[in-house]
Length: 294
Figure (cartoon, rainbow, N blue to C red):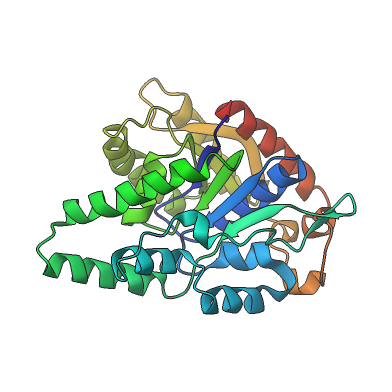
């Protein structure tokens, strides 16, 4: 069976997208799934979190070796080459061990220059007379083709998307079997949730998206305000004309979900990276995700 594609996305930043992406990716890999992380965020936090203890050095090396998602854009749309996404994979990128063995987890890293590359691509092609729709079509077709090739080599592909929507983000969302929307259950964060699951998802459903996005409550602090908002989110998910589903799992606000890889040292165990009850919560979320992508 070809890979199931999971995108972690929200129009709002700071809601736990990267933590969700990497924790799930490591849990999938620990359970024997051939797993790939595609980092689409110019901050490259997913890349750093996967690389781990020496993340800065590994990311610097990937940038020097021209094996980032930014280089995929440059090669295909500036250099006139036809390079597949598979040419930009860093294999066995994780420094985590599980049951005494290195975790088998592959990565297509991002780069701080990604946003600049995307802007330059827009300027370049619009100067040649391409409309934004044609630009999206060109990039989208190439990414869709490459994703189809990747899906033969993996069981699951997780995409860490940046805040907002770019050409590449819209393409991977449209190609996804499941879209996870991490959301803090507070007033400001749920405003972004309405925007994402409303206008943007309506557009994507016009492109054969069948499944509703699934909201994951994150950074839950147990306050009265967050409890009220969380219950309101669940009521909205259960409504007849809902724009989204919800996971039963709730990610708490606690240090175990924001461990600094540098503090862990080289080759940390999976249990050390997600300490206390964090790993159990992640495994519970993994079970729900697997049920949704079967």
